[in-house]
Length: 538
Image (cartoon, rainbow, N blue to C red; front, side):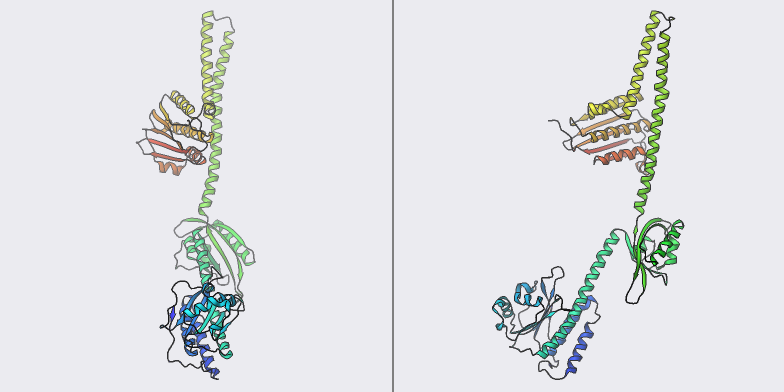
């Protein structure tokens, strides 16, 4: 930014009058202009102060370099007061380290540079002298902008472009005082900007995580809450809230526990509490609040401060897992009862009949022909019993899958289910690798088994299609029928164990599961699984 000197002001510093009152008035005016300025008005305030100071002191060029926050070793030209008739300053980033390396090194050490004639600068300042000459600088006086003697925030360069100029000690001291005002203002501006950026990042992170901040004044009961927290409470941004209205929306079963947590904070404890609220809309949410007491040194007030997160989804997931666990246990017990019934009502009874038949053969009542007929009958019943035991065994685990592979196992499954249920199950395959990873093969087998059982039970038809297709990267399974169909969204909301087990199996092998169905329009289950670990046929 380029500033132009004020005209018509009294150049009392140039002649160094004894009137200290004039300097004090100027210093008071500069301080008044800069004191308490909001951060977004500091630039304009410093511009006006530079015009006033430089115009009063007869300074024809002034520059301020400020340190980059991201790179503390770089000082960038930030303010320029310059006669518009002189060459304009560069519009690109003009850094001290590149253009005034000698000055930069001395000023970082908080050394003041005083050169009535720039030609008197030492040999190591050759780059600096070249930059001064480029911008018509004859005399230079540069003051570090530092507060408390620490690393400077920047530099204030006061130059003469018209003539060689002496800078008496009295004038130097006055300019140092003004430099201190500039330094304090700039430091406050930088701190405010960093604080705003930090607050913005914190607020963004909190809102992204679904969190809101709050403070509670126990003396008045007043609660300050961020807009995000009011949203969690079901309030509008302009709505006010206090302790009583907050407790009114806490679930009755959790209210006493929340009050105990608040009292614990007043005793200096840090609390973490999970509780439910019921907003005015009737929606219930789970929240988790963390907070503690903070005492402010300015006025001695103590406030309870903290952050609140929406944990509704997490609690719902936990509840769903608990429910799923119970349902899985119930399903396991139901499967055990089914197997027990199969063994008791079918296998055991067949064994009993075979045993009775063998005992009867031991009697002499039967002739040779009848005895042969009974033996054949017992042999047939024994084969049927073996077939039933084999079918029961396959339901638990298919040995074909282990010894013969995926395709023979699914082909055998289709044949056995078709014979047992008197249904036509058409199986086809193409491009399936010779060997598929065991976990992938088991997942595809079980999904085929579950899909066919559901289709046989609910579709109302007796014709089904099972197809396996393979590529170099994936295996795709499709099980379809043209039967009754169903509402997929309703089934997913009901979340039966069969559907859950299918989805969990496919997730375990990093695959995808798609179910397409409509009432009266049939059903198609499509599974796509990557072939990681599969050995492909040549």
